[in-house]
Length: 292
Ligand SMILES: Nc1nc2c(ncn2[C@@H]2O[C@H](COP(=O)(O)OP(=O)(O)O)[C@@H](O)[C@H]2O)c(=O)[nH]1
Ligand SMILES: [Mg+2]
Image (cartoon, rainbow, N blue to C red):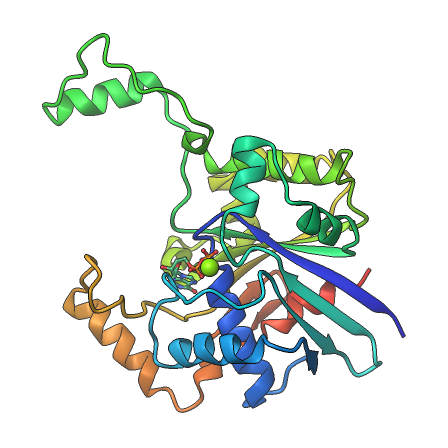
């Protein structure tokens, strides 16, 4: 019997809260069988988790979820062999991992969780990847659109303007370096909102190599000795409804998509987890794989 500590990492808006809401639904309802089952939860987290999974069931987005009373959420899952998996979401506020990239800072409580973890789930929103741009392409595009760039109009550089893959590789390198120097070797790259990109017809590994080539090469070359896998994850299964007061509006196709998801008899069947081994509704599969 092993006790495995897993940390959920990812920049803001990478799909962590949605995953947490769907995972809580899955393990508490047991509508479908899952590799891991709920063992226990820290006091105080249940109300928050019930609130976000209620929203998830109603097919509403988690963008402005109420803050959890505890700064971090952590649940314990268990497999058939009685191994336990303590899975911690240290980033309820959404700023920890962007702060590590932008300001080279990490809260000591979070750094302890990271250092002690045996596995990492790294979330990347597959549909909001910031690609690197070439100056010549940007200049050509703005000319085409009739919005010429006048000389001298500089935009000050900020770390958050960097391409997604640059931020992700740096984050992984930081995990390997002192003072964090984390124990984990296993890493599951979670390409979230997979429903938005799967029409491109790429499997998760090819998607990574095509859309995030720097990250793919960093992992493939074994630069920091990660034992890694890539999953395409749709924790929503499709479009969810925005807040009523949000600027975002859905077109009729998107509204239909929301309604179709609501009509599914078992909400757990909205969930899709895709990797080289096939497809399932079981979000605990990548977690179980992290047991090294
Ligand atoms: N279409 C789709 N959108 C998703 C999925 N998972 C997350 N999103 C959207 O991605 C955005 C960020 O998700 P969220 O869970 O709030 O990210 P967090 O900031 O990392 O907690 C939200 O607008 C979600 O609705 C998914 O499986 N499918
Ligand atoms: Mg969140």
